[in-house]
Length: 148
Image (cartoon, rainbow, N blue to C red; front, side, top):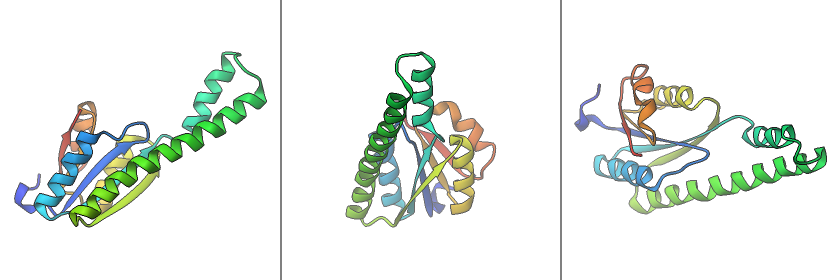
């Protein structure tokens, strides 16, 4: 694991469903204090809107046309919400003079965090859930912190 004095890159990972303020603040604070680059990783589950619509359809609540419109509406609303929340983190990084990059990916959360940590050379990885810290730590050479 890396020594705290050697932090050059902080990766903060958000799922599409939750961008926690405490997690964002902790990542921004660390990047600012360490004069480190901040990688803002947004991991989206593939086809979430379609999954929700499928469950609704499977339950027989609505017809095909309504379900298809529901899926489109969920995707649009979700995309807008994610964009708004990510832009707040980006704006704050900019105000603090933190070098940052936002990366949006789709797939399994843990796998995408591990891949991005390696690709960007993360020294510290911050996630919201403590339940995945061990899974990530086993695969990367970085400190992993959770902020629930």
